[in-house]
Image (tube, rainbow, N blue to C red):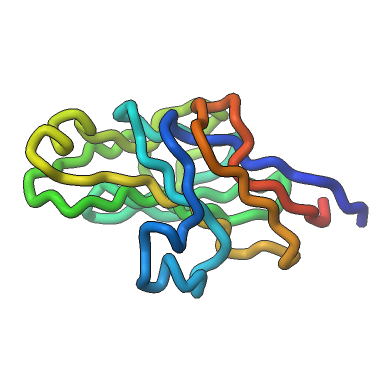
Length: 153
């Protein structure tokens, strides 16, 4: 078995912040794993790499994604305080997807216009190491690294 650096790319364009900057529950306490939150400027969350959809939520705003090449499980969830938010799910459990495949979406502009907030949490639930680098700031979907870790491949 070899080890290699793995970079997790942004699944949506926006501003990336540490997960604990926005959340004080299980997400912010990192009970589920290491991660970040992205304050999106666009509507659609995409698969960060090739993989497999293991679970989707009934609310259409949470997808658990397996990166089978690196043996990583990634939880992606849209969080909002708006009662007017609706989410469209574009995948189903059991589906294989390619990098860039749309996972779920919502109308971010509409939520913000109604005074609501939305962020997308990206949590790696089974990191093989505690050494994780989180990269914050402005991110571009598919282009900007948000997390880096060393993993056994």
